[in-house]
Image (cartoon, rainbow, N blue to C red):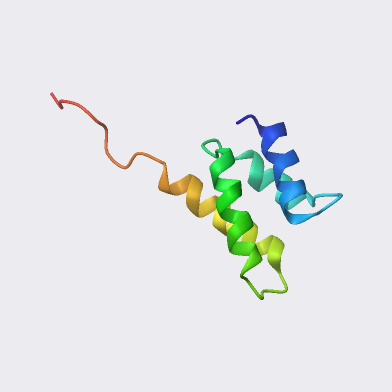
Length: 78
């Protein structure tokens, strides 16, 4: 997903008309998010009693993005 798509979907998911500079910067750095990550976020927010749901949302998306980062290269090492 492109950065504008991530920002738009995040706004819809957390029902936020405006995003803070920190949120925009952090979300723009997450390059491996998919629509499925936002579906997961929606389910987690539905069952969360957290008052700071935007902080929880950023944490969940960051975790999902980082989980997709390759830790070691795939293939033969010379």
